[in-house]
Structure formats: C-alpha cells, structure tokens
Length: 336
Ligand code: 13P
Image (cartoon, rainbow, N blue to C red; front, side):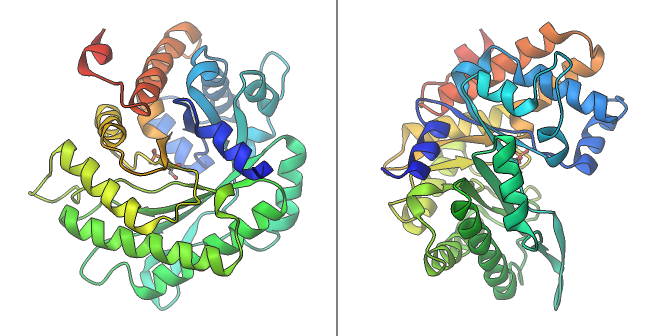
C-alpha cells in the first residue's frame, strides 16, 4: 500500500468523512453576514476553532479542508490550527486553487486558476502540516454547457494539480462540481456529470497520477434546482451509483461527496441511501461544507461565545453524516 493510499484511507474509512471548512474570505463573509456576524479574522477563527475542538472531531471527521488564512492562524488557546486538528486524530488539508475566472472563448463558463507557483505553495503547506489538498473545477448545465472546452480545460488543470500534489507527498482531492442550478432533468445531470468525470480520469491517467492516492469529490446526481421534475431520494442514490460505477476507475479508494446546496437533511438522506445501495467497491462518504456547518453557524450567530451550544449542534450533524456514510442513518436517530 502506498503512503498516499494510506492517507486517503485514513481520511475516509470507518464512517469518517471530511469537513470542508475552506470557504474563501469572500464566501465566508457572505455566510457570516447572512447571520449578522461581522466577518473579521477573529470571528472567522472563533467559529472554526469552535468546530475543530468539538468532541465529534475524534469520531466522525477524518480530515478538515482549510483556507490559507485559517491554516496560518493560532487558536485562542495557543495551538496552531493544524495542530488542533491533528490532536483530534483528523488530518489537516488545504484548498490550493485560487478560485475561478471566466473561461476565454466561453465566457459564461469558468476555469479554475492556481497552477502558477503551486509547487512552492505546496511545500509551504506541507511544512504547516497539510497532508491533503483540494482543487474545485466548476461546470454549469444548460443546452450548450458544459462545453467541450470547459470539460477539457478543467480536467487538464485538475490533472496538473494532482500530479504536483502527489509529488509533494500529499493526497489530492479531485473535485469536479457540476452545479445543480437550472431546469435540467436528473438524466441530463447523469449524462453531463459522467462526461465530466470520465474526462478528468483520462487526464489524470495521462499525467501519471497514482489513482490509489486520490479522493474524488463529485456532486450527486440531482434534477436541476429549477426543474419541476424532482426525483426521489432512492432514484438520486441509484443514478449517482450508476454514474460513478461507469466513470471511476476501480483503483480510486473512495468518493467524498460535496453537498452543493442540498439541505443538511437531504444531503444526509441521499448519502445514507447511496451507502445502503452501494454495489461498488468504493468507500462513499461526505466532504460537506454547508451541510455540516449550516445549523451550527445559525446557533453560533445567536451568541458567538456559547461554545457548547454550537458544538452540540455540530456534533449531532457530524454524527448523522457518519451514520449515513455507513448506511445506518434513520429519521428516528435524526430526531432523537
Ligand atoms: P458544499 O458541501 O457546501 O457544497 O461545499 C463543499 C465544497 O468544498 C465545495 O467546494
């Protein structure tokens, strides 16, 4: 077993998943302002250290994705953020893309940037304690999109990123996110997500990436959020499994879904069914941002000094996601 494969498995095995707390300062400011909290470096740190020192970190969270500001911060009780995460047994990770820009010659689509100087930044993050990384490519669905140009160029960037990350002895999370925005059917989402993922693996293989040392972070197969034709949770799980079975090489150790705008309960329910119906050899778990933090953020915003109430809320959500990652979640446990 390679070192990278061991790290990947440590992050996603035994019902553990990933806490995606890597919102950029711009995104975090939107989230904090939505609950009337000022977006200062101190407040961003306080919310995150409150989550990272929760009891559930030890049992349910295998890795935490950080943003550049956070990985460089020291907690209010004097530990560095990567040390705080490692002390719970979880692995610190870091978002290394620098965000999206409009794609030249297809300006309604996006291309993710951040390859220039990446090798040097990776060395710095490794020294700070990171052992895995994230890069998100983003795709929209419409009659014309995602274009071949967007599918090819984002896959190329994801592959170049992954090769550099493995060279730096870290595990790349490969995140091609096909957005849920639009009126499209779930079958269109299935077709387009499959095209996107297949192209990513073509490029990863071309760039000689060790597939046993990555984690794939895809969207689930959903109807567009404006579609009148919403499908059942059971159908979501079946179509998601069909997509991954047909487009992901078997060497990949596991898949950690993004929540992508689903509610906490929907994201949990769907992951639970995916695991109950899992007819693949892949571990299927969560790498949620909003679906792990939304309720905790709401509670925290009522009194940012009430650490206990925030942690209780987060502990429950993390436990529910972990149960779902094992196909053991139920409505009764949710509401207990
Ligand atoms: P969401 O779960 O909120 O979609 O965030 C996951 C993530 O990391 C997006 O890049």
